Image (cartoon, rainbow, N blue to C red):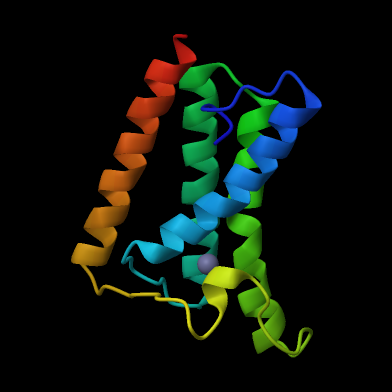
Length: 131
Ligand SMILES: [Zn+2]
């Protein structure tokens, strides 16, 4: 979201924050592969996400909004761990609630759809960065 919305006013920052959290809901709607919860996969996921954010910053030349958008896009998933460690009683984020359609796809289709989405995001940020 950070490369799509270049915030230059309070209203656009509010839009960036809302759209970044909303992007998590949309991504939870798209069937995807849920990585295993072992530490190796968590670290790999974190590294891949960080590399993706750095690539977007590199191609769009937009720094702070991309970092804010990326962090707000992943922050809702923290509650999965908080609930599993008993630090939170129940999940609160809308796309993590029981009624919300959340489809997991196994390897390779769940991973392929994520790769296609990452590629499309990089392309979009490349073109938006040229504005
Ligand atoms: Zn989620």
